[in-house]
Image 1 (cartoon, rainbow, N blue to C red):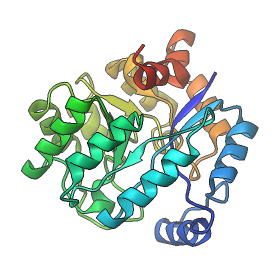
Image 2: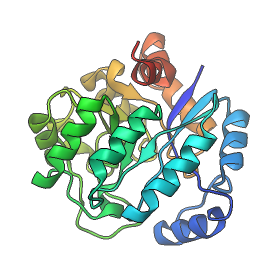
Image 3: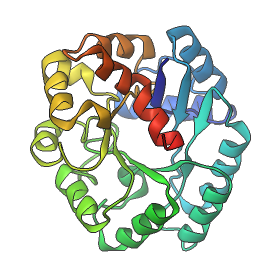
Amino acid sequence: MVIDFHTHCFADALAPSAIDRLQKNANITAVHDGTLGGLKAHMAACGVDQCVVQPVATKPSQVSVINKWALENTDDKAIFFSALHPDDPGFISAAQKLKQNGFKGVKLHPDYQHFFSDEPRMMPLYEALRDLGLAVVLHAGVDIGYPAPVHCTPMMLKRVIENVPGLKLVAAHMGSHALWRDAEDVLLGLPLYIDTSYSYYALQKANMSRMICKHGAQNVLFGTDSPWMRADDEIKNIMNLDLPFEDQEAILFKNALALLHGS
């Protein structure tokens, strides 16, 4: 079994313009058309059994629309996390509604949503999500389509963990994209998940294997950042790491099952 914990797609009407804009901003090429149908077809062709979709609201007015779409489209192949925006004055009540509707977690993107991940105003919001039992997936490190400054660094994540103990936190891109040395020094071994999305291309086998061993394979989730990486290539990369088979299984699906279903 394989669960891709970090994927993206857009409503059919929005996908063409969204994918075109993102490709141009980051100078990368998508591996599918960015629709939910395209995502599912890609995952099926690549041997992925389930994917977790991580939507992002770039302004508060998008939150309810995105979450309605996510709720309507969640099924046994594509499990949607939810969208929230820190500038929404109804953030906590919206989070409570998400919990009631059965969502398992929230995706926040500090760069796109214009907040630093360790700002004091964020701590009560993280606390609310923790108390609701909702996982929080944070884009971490450099976003290749977004200019400086970096809004979520390893040290910022460390402060979040220290200030909000018990938060189910997932730091994407092996803890911090393009800041992996800092992630290894500051984050690895702390109580958080990291995902493998959009990282192997730079880290390669030796560095990724070492980081996973240091952090513990039980705390690592398989992710591709689809549509920006092919899932079949990323599966092969995980299976090629210097890790025992049981650790590869944990990364590819067992840890995701535990986080999603609490087992």
